[in-house]
Length: 355
Image (cartoon, rainbow, N blue to C red):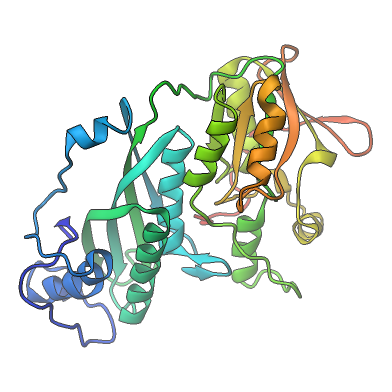
């Protein structure tokens, strides 16, 4: 996939081999057929522009949407590739869109680089590409360019994706991890830890009677709703690796404030809380792929909460704490038993390869 995802004028030839071979990454006709059949058809439909090595944008149209360009990139190596509530393709699109959205940007376009292990079934690759296309269409964002590489068996584990996104930041919006002030309110848009739990269960490490689905979802529309309700919003961050605990620690350090949260106010699914207790995991460090942490001024907190709860991706939203001048750089949890504990950053990783 070198260049934009747009079809050449001739009809693409179907790939008939059941598995990806090294020839599909060699730059010849096998590679061209793979790209046209699996990616161009899926991402661009019936487009007819000639393939180029880049996507091009009208700067006037971008400037009409905002005053700054946002740019982000991320790699996805989740294992397994498919899990309850999502797959690596949906995860890649949502993850990149969400990184743009929480910076106040309207997502515009994505790129996708694919690293494929020799021997991957073609149907697996087709399913991932189709999932990416559906998720991008759901979010109203185009996948416009990319790259394909095939590596020998054992050089990667099945399939790795790297997605890059650009967006346009809304005029007058200034959010950031260092913007928090004492008295500000911390809210989340719903139940935490579902993605980490879903991946752990999909690996066969748990035997839950009620499987937990990942919360994987594009958050840009929820973010727009939140900004409209709380125009003075200070900060947003999607709570992926490291969970809510990582976001709050970064906030405390960057803003030079203390963060106080109440354990009883943090929304958790009983199943997630239960398996964390059994396995000795802390749910505040579990990854999420459809949850954000937002900090808003106290006078806008109730309006922000009501607006988020009215959105389909925020029905379980909750205010979980406040920022304080005391104990700057620290995150302190008021436990359900009436005590306090420090919530630090993780040194390592509770669950590797969750995104």
